[in-house]
Image 1 (tube, rainbow, N blue to C red):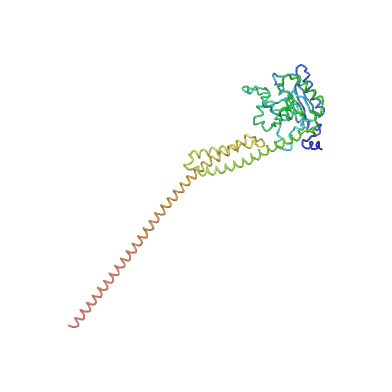
Image 2 (cartoon, rainbow, N blue to C red):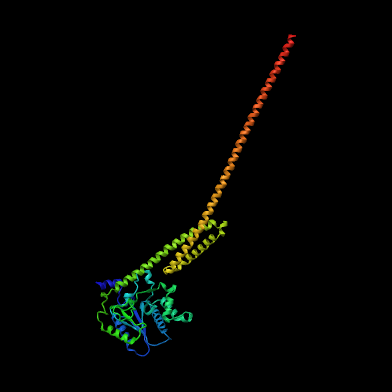
Length: 430
């Protein structure tokens, strides 16, 4: 029942299925050493059980540890030259000082699920130790990215000679995997999945081998021959403590939880990016309205206006270049996005405060002018009313005088008539 569950969870396809093939690669040269040959035999047993081809470089080609990346690069190119249906899909590198302990653990179980966009981009499975990256064991998807990565590792010391490479090819690989081009192609898995270190401690720490673990790695170990032979004995005994059936291990559930967390982080990052860029676009739109409103005013030379214009220009440049990040969003992009949004909105707020004060001042001046105009108009109205009243008074006075004159003239005429009548009467009397 559990095996069927594991088959669904990790797609344990037929090992002869051309779409699910894995190969192992390693390097072992120099004089024959029993402990290394026994370690290699443990891999051969594991290969037979699960059907993995293994390729071992037996000659030292380059100086130092640089034969390793050269051989890996060769193997990647070798597979890429084949038709896609005939290629190995993944290669797992194993240093010569690794011994398989649990032969029941297939390499397929470690691969990222293919049902998620973010996980389909993963090309490297590797772990860290207390010194940083450890590339003693890692998985690499056969891909153009892999070919470019190992070409870069091989060329690193020639093109970046000023960079100190404490651990030679491993340090070069660590530097390149931290660069933007690689970040989303790398999954840093728990060390004990396939890179547990040797220890004699009965209560080992999280970096050290536990019963049931896939293998043991002797990185940086003294008296390596003695210790490796001791662990080779345990490997060859095939006892239950170390060669535990997969169905009795917590490893499958741990791996499933790891990939579920990885999916969640990827999804959250994408959602944050989509929401953040929409927010930024809205902020740019609002900033443009403000800038256009004030661009032709004297305030366009103020420090806060110039700061807003600069922040808006930076935001538009960021948005214009953000399309190249689609599907490749990294944590630093979200930090940069947040920083730009905050910078634009702060600049907008500062200038908006200035603009509000200016508008308030303009409004106050407008109201003052309106009040002055109202008073002026009121005074004019009163003046006109007074002038009107004065005109009416004068008119009435003139009419009164005219009436008085007319009455006086009437009286004068009447008096004259009376005088005339009196004179006429006198004449008649004589």
